[in-house]
Length: 127
Image (cartoon, rainbow, N blue to C red; front, top):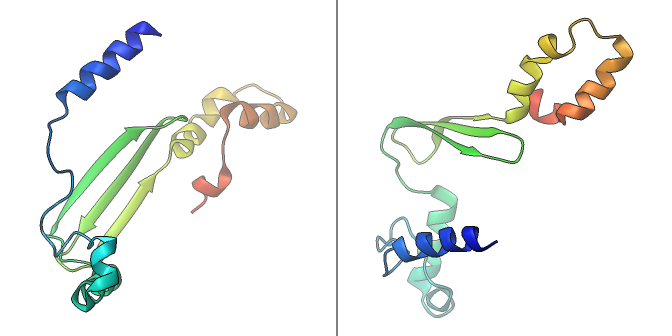
């Protein structure tokens, strides 16, 4: 437990000090105190969360390591406030693709145990 704590301390020491919130009021929600006291802040809050803000055109793919494997998100923006495409790649899809190799020469009754072992959620695969 001491070594992970040292790693955490090193990470915390590398975080720069200062504000963590974006100063641009067009993409950052107003503070709660401002919303309760200023009508302009209420209007800005409403417009920000209903219309959004203009995202520059382009695409990006970002992946993180989840408990079941890699979870990836692919976003394509066309320059409006709405995304053109959003594709989420779940780990279960990759796990199911190797089912032919894992279940090769197995009995049909073994497939239930294999699916349970792989921890597949068919709701995330069949979309």
